[in-house]
Each structure stands twice: as C-alpha cells, then as structure tokens.
Length: 422
Ligand code: TMP
Image (cartoon, rainbow, N blue to C red):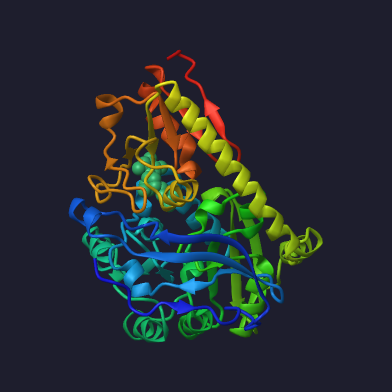
C-alpha cells in the first residue's frame, strides 16, 4: 500500500466558499473504510485520518474537514456495484424511468461517470443505447471492458469530456450515481459535464440525501470518500453557478434514502417540475438549513453506540457467537466508531471475492466467504450492509432455518429472532 499524496484541510465551503463552517460530528482518527488489509499488512500499520463533519451556515452543505488524495483512495478500490441484486434492479429502473421521462432516442450517446464494473452501463446497452463508462480504477475499468462494456479508465474532468466528444460524439445524457459526494472540485467536475453535454441534453445524478441521513441516523455513511452530504439547496447553488438548471428531483429508497436530480443547461427548454420548489421549501421549513438539527444529531448517535455495545456484550456474556454480513464501508465505520472488534465479532462474510481472506481496516476482523455460515455457524448475524438487509436475509434462509438470528443496527437496533428457535 502506498502512502497518501498530499491531504488537504478544507479552508472554505466547497460550494459557496463561505468560511462560516460549524464542526458538528468528530469521529477523530479513522482508517479508510474501503481499504481491507492483507495478512502481512496487519503488522505493518495502517494509515488513519481525521474524520470530522462541518456544516456550512451559508448554503447548508455538510462536508468533511479534510480531503484525502483521490489517487490514494481509489487505487485499490474493492467495491463492485454488480454484487447486489437490489442495485441491479435499481439500475434497470433508472434506464426505464429515464428512457421514458427524457424521451431518449435509440442510439443516443450516454456517458456514465464512475461506472464501476458496468452495472448500469450494461442495462443502457441492453436497452439499445450507445453507452460509454468512465471509471478511474484500472482494475475495475478492465473488468468492465472484459465484459464488453466500453469503459475509459480516467477520472472525470475537462480532458475526459473533450476525449469523449472527439472519439464518440456528443452525449445526450450524462449520468452519475453516487459519484458527486466523492468530488472535491465540484466546479471543475460540473464544468466538464457542461463541456461534453449536448445543448438539449440532460445531466442526471443520484446522491444520498442529507434529510434521510439525519432522520435515520446514517452516520455510518460518513467516510473519507464521501466529501459532501447533500441537500437540494446547496446543489441548486452549485448547479446554477456551473450553468445548469434543476428540472426534477425525486426521492429514492436506494442506499437508505437518496435523491435523483435531473438538470439541463440553463437556457434549454424543459420546464421544472413542482417537486423542485417543494423540496427546497421543505428543507428550509424543517430546519435543515440551520445548524441546530445537526448539533442534536450527535447525541442520538452516541446513544445508539452505547445501546449496540450493551446488546453485543450481553450476548457475548451469554456465550453467543456473533458474526457479521457485508464488509461494507458503512460496516467499517459502524464497528470502528462503536469500538467493536474481534473480541465480539468472529468474522465478516462478504460475497465480493476481492474482499475475502482480507481483514477489515481498524478492527482487523477477518473477511470470509459465505461457507463460514455453515462451517462456523454463529448464533447472531449483525447485518452491516443494512441497506441490503432483505436481500441478505433471503439469501441466508438456511441459516435462519437452522435457528440463526439477525441484528440490524440502524436506524434503530432491531433483533430478528429465528422463528425456528435456536
Ligand atoms: P455497500 O453498502 O457499500 O453497497 O456495500 C455492501 C457490501 O455488502 C459489499 O461489500 C458487498 C456486500 N454484499 C454481499 O456480500 N452480499 C450481498 O448479497 C449484498 C447485497 C452485499
């Protein structure tokens, strides 16, 4: 593992440049949530970085106080979006929804930014569009290309936008799911979208929604890759300053609550739906643009941490064996923040081959494949990839039938006892 290139302390708001930034949640030093360790790396030490959330009093953007270099974060990225059936279904819905809503013509050029292993790209291609992915991780981009999904291995920016124009033409749709939160220089990113996009084209993106984050305690989505935590209000600010207009927004269930935003160029014809003003008004009237709501959030998390620790320690005292499912970044944050380690959790199951036989950063809990559920059957399975709880419970039905129980940690701790006894 290389050591990071320059890390940067945030001097002013990423969107409105205000210095009116209020710190409200400090995790102190945390390891990288998506970086699993090999056996030799366990003894060589691992980097930790401050993880602290700031709220901008002027535009309402929550953001991390420090930026870890993108090259360092993404050089060995283990996340594969295709692993989840829930996300596969979601991608299918995106294609159907946008084809209809934006009246996309067959053969239109579509560009996906941060296309990962091509989960969404493949659905666009199956629907008859010409789709190109842009993905900065070499290994993941090569995997997508090997599956026949055209993918440029690049970070998104002006030169990538110009390359697309030169080599493929002018995109009618540029789309990014779960990428904007990862971007430090939003102005440069959006400027590149504006450069590439057709005059009557659309820019569509999905981001986790800060309203859900606060309401359902999604503090476990706070990690070094996620630099910004969006409301629609600051998004409107930055999109307008980059020459776009928001014409639609809708709430989605994916990743415990996201929004899909549709924007067009500022002088293009589409009329904005009423949803846009309704979202903006709700954010203001419900207090999301004021700091109080954020300051109150922290005590709720501290309570949850205590409750979860108490529950797990009482199970351990009763000689119960506990394992976890989903070596997700979220799970990493939850366990590290709550100080839960291998003394409590025997192993974490993950279906991603690249994660197996490694160790979670910080806690050093081993990550194993699903066969361990039978080989070393636990009494309780803590579902760390809680956004996919239903999918995980249904794929482990044999474990439940054999008397295995589940714990879902958030938004409220929920214990699902096996109906088959223990
Ligand atoms: P995410 O919450 O960041 O999307 O990560 C989910 C993690 O859970 C990822 O490491 C893959 C893992 N996972 C499985 O191993 N099996 C599954 O069936 C699902 C849905 C997720």
